[in-house]
Image (cartoon, rainbow, N blue to C red; front, side):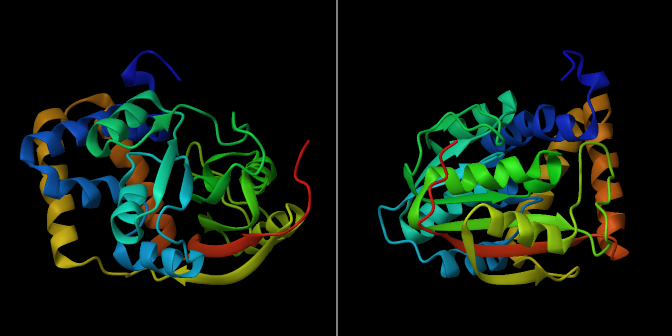
Length: 263
């Protein structure tokens, strides 16, 4: 990633400069905005509830969030199911913001090579991350490696219906639906359920209002910054792909099998 925010790709801008700005805006407006604002781009309560219901985690379960972003989904899981999240996030501003906003343990790490021992977590999820790396099979194998046998695994990924991966916009690689299933099975995971997030999936009014308030604050403070412009362009491109049916948002809940995932 470039040291000059004006030279960042849209993806880097979103998870670096934008992450810090969102956290700044939340601190200025109040904690009640934190979870909705930090879940933007990942999913609302219906999406997260779908995954949590199928992952069926007991209170005290250790949940590893790979590519945690600002930490909103993990905070939602902690508050709803009393799990104990541990966050991994490669981008420095997002990692700092997640720790500041929610007080959960967070470390910087790449999803394709996790600095963790085998079978060390009760559950793991990765939301909106698989479609941001060309090393997708490695990422799925890492999810399977670090979760205990029988542990729950949750994934949200943008997929394409085409036979080949659709690459767009910058920093994204959208795999075909069938390829996701193949990677999951090859990693020794057993799919329990899948669902597709509708294009027009509505947010609760309080979440919608909270996200709008924080975005307005970010735009007021930083709307003319090149990183903000890049992030908004990335968001618009992604929105067009979803609206035109070129990519779809897939949810997948699985369980780890008994195979040895060591390398």
